[in-house]
Length: 256
Image (cartoon, rainbow, N blue to C red; front, side, top):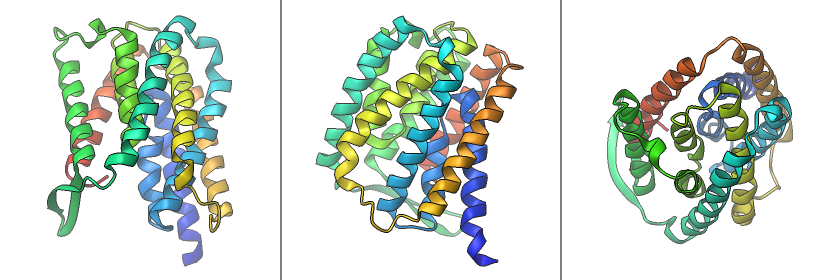
C-alpha cells in the first residue's frame, strides 16, 4: 500500500495544479516540484517537473490555440525569450549565492535564498498593485513585461506568476489571456531546457511516476478548459491576485 503513496500524491498535485493553472496561468511547476522532491532527489525532481510542465503546455496550446493574440505573443514572447535566456545563464553563475535567511514553520526549519526572496517580494508587490488599480503595470511596454517574467522564469522557474500579473492588466479577453500566456510559457520552457539540459540526468528517472504526473496534468487541463468557459476575466484576475499572495508568502516563509 505504501508503494502507491507516491503515485497518489503526484497524481493529486498534478491534477489539481493543472486545473487551477487554466484560471491563474501559473502554479503547476511550483507545486509539482516539491511534490516530486518528496520521492526523488532534487535533480531528478527538476527534470521530471520540466517534462510534465512542457508536455502539459503542448496539450494546453492545442486546447486554446484559437485564442492566441499574435501581436501580444510577438512583443511579450520576444522579451520573455530574451529574459529566460539571460536568467537561465545567470542561474548557472549565481546558483551558489547562498542562504539569505532561515525561519521555522510548525517546528520545521526552513531556508530562503536570495533569488527566492526577490521572487516572493515581487509577487506580493504585484498582488498589492491588484488592490490599488491606480498603479498601472499595464503601462509598461509588453516587451519589458515579457523580459521581466522570462528573466525570473529562467532564474527561478517562477515565470508564470509574473507573466499572469502583467497580462491580467492588459484588458484582454479571458481566452486571449490564457491562450497567449500558455504559448509564451511553452516558448520559455523550451528556452530553459536548452540551458538546463546539462543538469538533467535521464538515468534513474522513475518513468511510471513521471507518466502518472503527465496524465494527471493533462486530465486536469482538460477539466480546466471545461470549467473555464463558465468564468469571467474579473474572476480570473481575482484568482491571480490571491494566488500571488499565497505563492509569494509561501516562498518568503520557505514553504516552497
